[in-house]
Structure formats: structure tokens, C-alpha cells
Amino acid sequence: MTEQRKDILDMLAAGKITAEEAEQLIAALERDHAPATASHDARPKGKVKYLRVVVDATDNGEPSRVNVRVPLQLLRAGVRLAALVPPQALVKANASLSDSGVPIDLTQLKPEQLEALVEHLDEVTVEVDSPDATVRVFCE
Amino acid sequence: MPQLVTVKVSRPDRRPIRFWIPVLPLALVLFPVVVLVVLAAIVACVVFRIGVVRALGAAWRVISALPGARFDIEHCRTAVLVAIR
Image 1 (cartoon, chains in turn red, brown):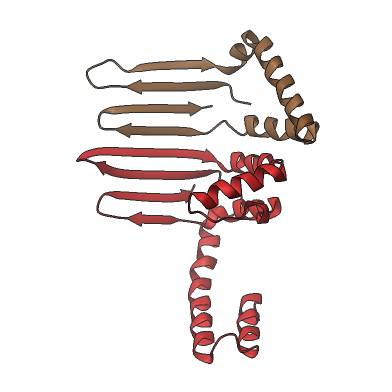
Image 2 (cartoon, each protein chain N blue to C red):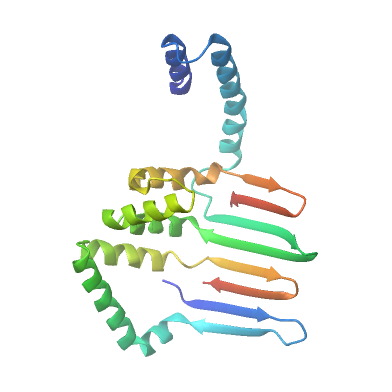
């Protein structure tokens, strides 16, 4: 039994979710599991080196394109650098973010969590399609 | 560590401008400025009670991870490319 399936069953046992919700979650888990395994086989870990952000947009009828390639190693180094930010600066940043309508508590972000996030970025592909713009974020 | 930074600027009705900036020779020429920046960073670390060695190590990691980065922005017929090798 996988850890995620166990969590779902625990939530069902604790009465936090209904049997139908648990069934839906387990079905979603099984759906996600197959492609994830396939992608692991197709793209072995360690081969991915860059995070790519590609934006194609039209601004007042004029085409715009942003194509950014950032080494994942740079993200890891950035996370280590960000871990050095003093707590008082984080509190000020939290206040500014909150004023801007983005209530994120940066003090809750731990470096090891961010590193884990960067580690698993190679499995992430984000595609946003809108009439005016297309955004693709992926690793290669 | 980055060896070469390529900057290309293309504008409509003008010839594209391309710069190849060798990082090491430039760093050697700007060595006094680099030393001042490092000293300022050390003072800032002491003021804000951040480990100087950790901070310098992290900054060095960022610099050495830069090769391979590429930023390519096009808007209308203007384009800017910055590539670090």
C-alpha cells in the first residue's frame, strides 16, 4: 500500500472525507501513477539540466516572445542563498506581500522544502493556453 | 564559473548589436571594484548577523551555476538575448 493511499484511508477512517471522496481520490491516484511511472522510464533522473519558460503572446496585435533557460543548479544555489535571508527581512517581506494581496508567510518556507521542490521540478510541465498568450514551463 | 556572456540587441531598422563579454578578463580589470563589493558584502553579513563564509559560499555557488542560462526576449521587432556560457 502506498503512503498516499494510506493517507486517504486514514482520512476516511477519521471521518474527514466521505467514502465517495475517498474513492475519487484513490481513482485519481491510480490515474496519476501510471503516467508518472512511464515518464520516469522515458526521462531518467539526472538528465534534466534546465528549467525552460516559453511565453508566446500578442500585445496589441504585436507578437511577443520570452524564452528563458535557467540551469536547475542555479535554482538550487538560489535556494541556498535565499536561506540566508534574515528573519526580520522575511517579516518585512511578509507584510509587503500581504499589503499587495499575496498573503504568503515566507518564514514557513524551509530551505529543505524548497530544495525538494527543485529536485522534483524535472517532472513538472505547466502549459497555459489563453487567446492572447501561451505559457509553457518545463524541464529539459 | 561563467566564461563568456553574449548580449545581442536587435532593433527595427538598425543593425543588430552583439557583444561578447569575456568574464575572467573583465573581472581582472574590475578587480578593485570586486574587492570593494566583497568587503561591502562582508560588512552587510556582519551587520545582519549572517554567516560570512556561508553567504560567500552561497554567492559563489550562484555565480558558478550561471553557465547555461539564456534569456531571450522579443517584443514587436525588438529582441534582446543574453546568454551565459
